[in-house]
Length: 119
Image (tube, rainbow, N blue to C red; front, side, top):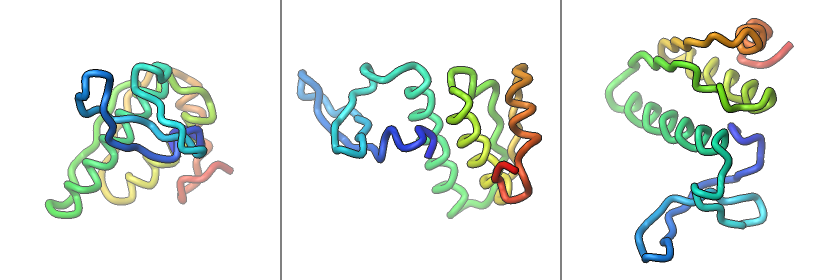
């Protein structure tokens, strides 16, 4: 969701040195190593992993605050909107605190409805 369909999943793979690595998988099954991703896509990968680990943790230990600072700085508008929607969904389960100095992100957040969708 964070990449707006550019990637459909993640897989473990091996690099040239036969070391295990994480790769992004495109809808056509093309594998993209982290080094081949844009900085924004790498940020989205990291954030997706944080979301997944937080969800897993909360399943067994209960809610805990999720605090982030300017996590959308390298995201385009569409990916920012998708991420803000996911943060709104997460806020139904736990406290989400997001710091930013970007007015466009404040405006995008204000356009979210209570269901985490854009009106």
